[in-house]
Length: 130
Image (cartoon, rainbow, N blue to C red):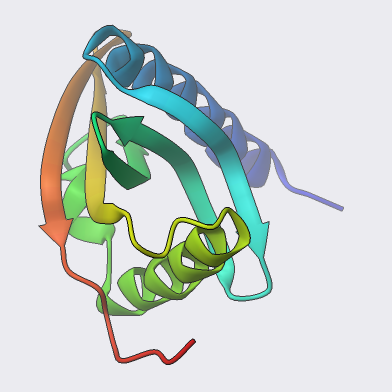
């Protein structure tokens, strides 16, 4: 059975992803997919900005007690996102399209979100052959 803490984390994540989706939509991105999942991992938001496909990881926090939200995108997480992004590109026939990895950092201060978009937050992690 899931604990109250698990429920709060899931709700915080969902609220953050909704805020991120709204923010990027207002800033010229077109959302292609949300919560894109494969065995290799999950990508919170896949969007297009101009001719570039953007893979966005959303990190949401209620305090800075454990650092800035974006600091929690570990190398392991970057590798999972990279691998999953390749599945998306291949599945949608976009292997020749420009792509990048962005992070959306959301910090809820006084109940309203402070949203920070970090473009090109990291490069493709690892070497993959498709």
